[in-house]
Image (cartoon, rainbow, N blue to C red; front, top):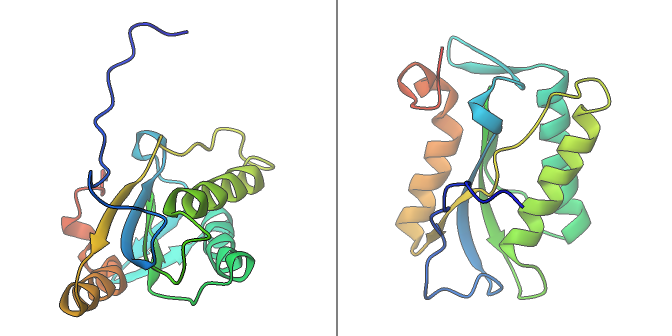
Length: 153
């Protein structure tokens, strides 16, 4: 086992039960923020083959887990989504893990270098106004790409 790995900061909200129904905003990044999913042209995200696979895998996750579709966007090196969990039979970690695994397996068939960053970022959505803001953030993300901290170009 690797002894010199840096200690990872726990990003989870300490007093929240992630199996409970509720709203979440998630961000999943590629390893080292590498561009795998396409390019932003103007204010539109143009998905390449890997990006389309990520897009389709997220939609399939909704069907697989019986969730209602909500706002999401695949960006060149990360993915944002709003998730509304209706019950306690699925944790947020299970949903994200399933998505990341499905995308990685699909993309590695033609690009063995693909990898996700460990973990993911999430934010518990606490009210209707915050839900509205998170949905707008996701939808408008390609238009703000030039100023995005994930844009390493």
